[in-house]
Length: 439
Ligand code: NAP
Ligand code: HSE
Image 1 (cartoon, rainbow, N blue to C red):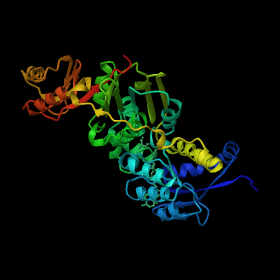
Image 2 (cartoon, rainbow, N blue to C red):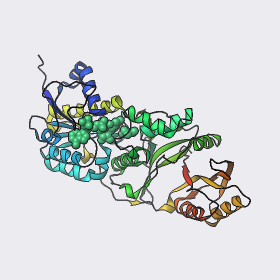
Image 3 (cartoon, rainbow, N blue to C red):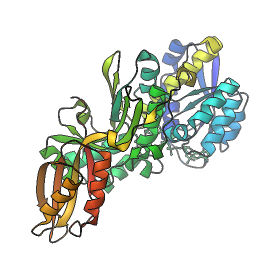
Image 4 (spheres, protein in one colour):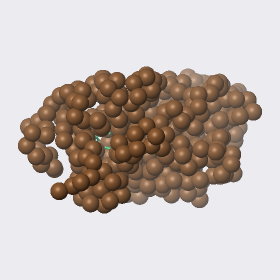
C-alpha cells in the first residue's frame, strides 16, 4: 500500500494527448513516485463520445462525458485540459481556476485567444495555469525561457513550431510525395490538429509564437497583428528550386525585438534558410527553436514537436510542478504567469521588416514578359538577384522564379499587387521570405 500522498488528476480529453498521458503515467509510475514523492492518479476522464473504441481501456467508473463536472469536482485538484478548441475548453479552464485548482493545458489556441483572462483568473483565485505542452511538443521551451534564460532579454527567437508542417515539407522534399497524401499520414499519426487548416495555414504556429512572444516580451500579440502564411501553396518544385539556390524551406515563427526603437515583430511564414543552417536540417515531426539572449548568446533546442509521446512528456513535466505545489504548498517554486513582466512596445511597421524574397510566377511564355516583370519590381525599388525559368504545368506558360536583394514588406507587398495586375501573370504569385539568421 502506498504511503505517499495521492494527487488526484482529471483528464478532460482522452484522444492523442490524453491517452499518451495515461500510458506514460502507468508505464513510469514507480519512477515518478520516486522522483516526485507523490502518487499521480487519474481518477476522472471526460470525452465527447464514451462509446468510441480507444487504445487505452479505462477502469470502470472513470469515464464521463461532462468535462465541466471534472473541473468542478472538489476531489480533483488538478485538471488537464486536453480537448482543444476555445469554447468548452475555456469554460473548463476558468471553472477550475476559479476554484483555485491547477490547470495543465496543451491548448495554444486557447492561450493565444484568452491568455490574459486565464492568467488573471488564476491570479485572482489562487489557481495555477501550466502550459509546457502548448509550444514545441516535447521541447521544454517554456521552462527554458521562464527559468533557464531568466537573466536575458531576447532580440530574436525563431524556429519550427509545427510538427505537421515540418513532416509534410520533409516528405515532399525527400520523396516528392504529394501534399494531400502526406497530410493524411500526419493526421493518422496524431500530429495534426482536429482542424488541420490550423496547421497548414500557419495559425497553430502563430498561436505558439504568441505564447513565446508573451513569455519573452510580456506583450500579447494577436494573430491579426502578425504576418501569418502557411504551406498549402508550396509545391515540390519550390523545394527543388530552393535546393538549387542553396536553401531549404521551413515554416518558421520569427519573433524579433529592436530594443533601440522598442519595436516588436512576430511573424509566421515559409522561409528559405541557407542549407547549412542547423534549423534547415531539422526534419520530420521535429521542431527546433533558436533563442538569442543578450546575456547568453544564441541557444538552440530541438525535439519532437507533436505526437502522443512527446506531448505527454511535456504534460507530465507540468504534473510534476503540480505535485510540488501539493507537497510544498504555495511556497513551491513553480513560476507561473506572474513571472512574466508586462512591457509596452510598438509593433514594427512593414517597412522595418526587411528580408530577401523568393517570388514564383506562372506567366505567359511569350516575348517581353520577363521585361514587364522586371519593370514592375524596379518600380518599387525591389532589386532582382537571380532568375530561374522553367516549364509550368499549364500549356503555353512558364514558371519564373526570382530572388531579390534585401527589401522590405511594404515594397514587396506593392510589387506583388502590381504583378497580380499584369495580364501575363496567370496565377497568384507565390512569395517566400529568405532568412539568413546566422549572419
Ligand atoms: P484529439 O486526439 O482530437 O483528442 C481530443 C479529445 O477531447 C478527445 O478525447 C475528445 O473526445 C475530447 N473532446 C473534444 N471535445 C469534447 C467535448 N465537447 N466534450 C468532451 N470531450 C471532448 O486531440 P489531441 O491531439 O489529443 O489534442 C488535444 C489538445 O492538445 C489540443 O489543444 C491540441 O492542440 C493540443 N496538442 C496536441 C498535440 C498533438 O501532437 N496531438 C501536441 C501538443 C498539443 P472523443 O475522443 O470522444 O472525440
Ligand atoms: N498540430 C500540432 C503540430 C501539434 O503539428 O505541431 C503540436 O502542437
